[in-house]
Each structure stands twice: as C-alpha cells, then as structure tokens.
Image (cartoon, rainbow, N blue to C red; front, side, top):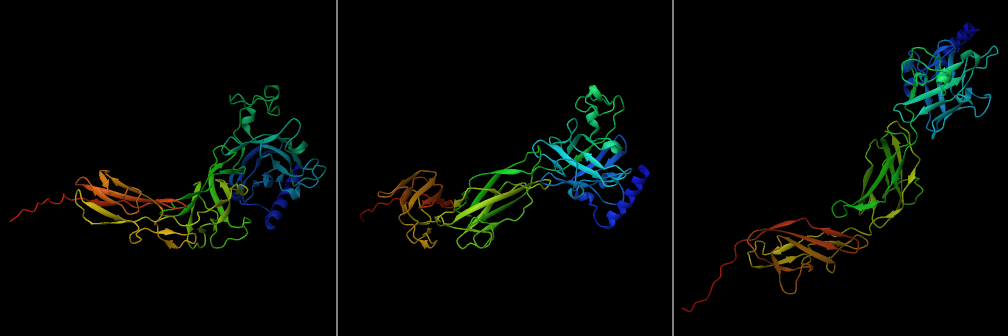
Length: 424
C-alpha cells in the first residue's frame, strides 16, 4: 500500500507543479523538520528541505495555516483549508491561538485513499502542537497524530529530552510528551517560524512644536509587540479633516508605509498648506498603523482629535540707535517703531505687534532702563553700564504663543569724553 501511496504522491506532485499550486518556500514563514515514527522526516519548507520545487507552510496574520509540507514516503501534506473540507471534527483548518500559542485543527496527506483518510490531528485530549512565543525564531513544540499510517509526529526533538542528558525520555519519564521513545540518542530537529502576532502602539497627545521657526505638529507613539524582542519595522500615519480617511487633499497628510523604527514624526503647518501639510485653525483627526520587523501589521489605531494653532506665531526683531553705543549712553531700542517685528491676525495677515507682551533680555544684565521704560516696554531706552560686548534678545507673546528673537550682539565702546566749557 505504501508503494502505491508513494507513486500517487509523485504523480500528484507533478500535477500540482504544472497547476502552479505549490507555494514558494521563500515566501513562507515556517521551516524545518518534523519526525514521524512511521514515515520518517517531514519537511516544512523547500529552503531547508531541498528539492528543485519551491514549497512551504505559512501562518497568516490571522493565525491560519496554509501551504504544503513534504514527505518522501507519503508526498504532500496540505494545510490549505480547501483541502481540509470534511475534517473529522471541529473547524476544518489549522490555526494558532494568538494568545496561548496553541495550534488546533487539521492537516491532511493528499495521497490518502485505500481506506486511509490521511487526516493529521494537531490537538487531542492527550497530545498537542503549540508555538513558543518566547523564542526567536519561534519554536514549534509537541506532537500531532496521523493515524495508523503516519502515527505520532514530533515537531521538536528537545521535547523528548527534558533533562538535557542527550537521551530521549518517554512514557512515565516524560509526562508532558509520553509519546517520546525512551533511552535513544537525541536527534536534532525542530519546526520553526518567524510568524509574528500583530503589534500595537500607544499614541501620545499631538503637540505643536517649533511654531516660531519651523511650525510643525509633533506625533509620537510607543510601539508594543506581544512577541518578546520584536521591533517596529514600519509605520503609516494619516491626518484627515473629516475623520473618514477616504481621501487626502490639501492641508491633510498621509505618510504612506514608511520602513523605519522611529516612533515619531513631524508634519509641517503652513499658512497656505499644500499636499502633506497641515493648515492653521483646523480641527484634525489622526490614526496610525504599525508593522513589526517580520511584516505583521496592527489594525488602525486612532488618536485623539486636535486643533492646530489659530494663526502664525510672532516674529520678533529689533534695531537700536546708535548702532555703536558707548558706555553710559542711553540707547533707543525699536521693536515696533517701524514695524521691525511682525505679528499675525486670525487670517494670518501681517499686523503690528504693538500692544502685545514684550520681554527684553540683556547679557550681561548690567543695564539701566530710562525712566518710563522697562524690560516689558515695546521700545525701551537702555544704558549699558560697562564697556564690553552685550547680547540682546526680545520675546513677544500674543494670543496664541511666544517667540524669541535670535540673539544680537552689541559692542559697547569706551564712554564719551567729558568736557567742561571754560571762559576765554
């Protein structure tokens, strides 16, 4: 019977090749070897199993298996749902529990026939297959049952050596895996996978940033993955006015899929926003999707809606007269004398900064303000008390924010000579 089964498997093998049904091993995320007590080795991927035809088993993002394993003695073993219709019990698929790692359901040898049904049960009352999420790559563990033809299938040789002495333990010596043989030299095989459970992320509140020099909204998040050691491989951020995220016009943003481990992004805010820029005084919705390094993706994660600032921030600037002051000489500083500084209204039109809040700063602070002026004056008069180089800055605060000018250096010269008029 086994010879007939094997010949049928070879025929089926070439039929599936010509029909294009064999999956490429390099595109699948399960590989390695399992061992059957009756039929020997079972390969889960052509990249490790050899051969001139690509094949493999894959676990989808939903945990459902697909694809083919290969045995030289019985041929193709299918994990595809289409081949599992009519399974003996339960749901006719092979699937992993994304929380516990337990594998349940069925696979089937496609060469079944002659009173052999080909079913392979992945979980029963006294046996199980599971995936250890703590390893990287992740190891399969446990045993499946393939009936009288295939018998027990071991997915990991380490299960048969719980005391790590190099010899197998079975029966009462190994209550977790009693199917193991007893007292044999340990082999070295296992089935492994890079399957990744979907990640997620914690989104932080959106913050305005650099509104004085380079206005942006700052988006940040913390990548989280249920599989230890998995890192962020990519992200996609979308910002939308309507909240339906159906299309993105001017003043909205879509990063597309960005392959990066960085967990923040800055989006430009512009007076006349273009594509992938945001506008002022606008209510926005945003969402994020993240992928781990193996390509597993989260669902869309929605952040709290936010509003951009009403208008542009002040642009402080100033001049002074005389331009080369002397020690002890009063100097006129001008911020609004000739509209040196610029402020903005709700429509982002330039207006005078007169009437806003001002704060002057000098370093060193050995200065004296003239009567009637102070550090909070728009255009103060200031006397420098020492002959050295001073640095001056101006801060202006309006109804939306505060900006500080670039520092300007003022060189203070020797005091002017004193003179006294003498009668001729």
